[in-house]
Length: 335
Image (tube, rainbow, N blue to C red):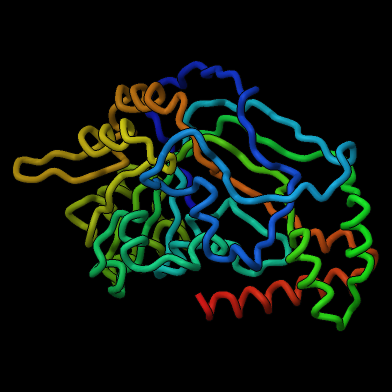
């Protein structure tokens, strides 16, 4: 990942907001076997059409005793980060992985697939803002994100399972695959340890393979170029890239989408191109975007912790995670 300053002028004052009404199921359990590949339907992580009040609507189970875990909400800046995050992605799978850079699931080898495993081409076209032809070409991709963290919700304490869950948990044995699957089906395989609420504006640029390799080598690997203007002019300008994807917001808010489509564009004598970098060039755009996203919400980071981590031995924990990954691989084949 490369970080590039997002605002050339002065840093703006911190925005304030009351987060008391944010209701998310941190500390509650989910069965990631059953929901594998479909979490983008129940966790607001991409610009869905049904934008609105829900942030997480994933079915969860309260498996821990009420006093063992508690939610702690930490207000964050509630303003866009001062730097763009720029990810070089070798192919479409790499692009999906980097989009979910801040999403983890303990014991799961490829946590991004929890969200993308069910995506078909029309879905990917919509959320990544690129044409089908480009997505299925040999292009390399550059993901550019500008993140606005508002509140972090984390769990504190030592989780203690409720009596019925504890009895089932005690029956998990190394070598007994059914004992793991039965527990996960009845009580959940993981619980939400923490998540960050906010919004994120992003754009994906597609480059022909040769140009992509040159850009990645010079900017990321050998670090020959660090000046933003040079990076942009030599590697990422609209007339250099294969396709400039649509600039979007993770929340999917319609007012923000309209603003991004109409205002966050580069205009030349004969063409107009969507360009997230216009935000850097024009402080007014970022100021207006701050206002428009004051009340928009999406999940911009999420950590699932394995309930198997509570097992008494390392061998049992490793076996639990092995069963999880084997089951996830089978689920992916069958989606």
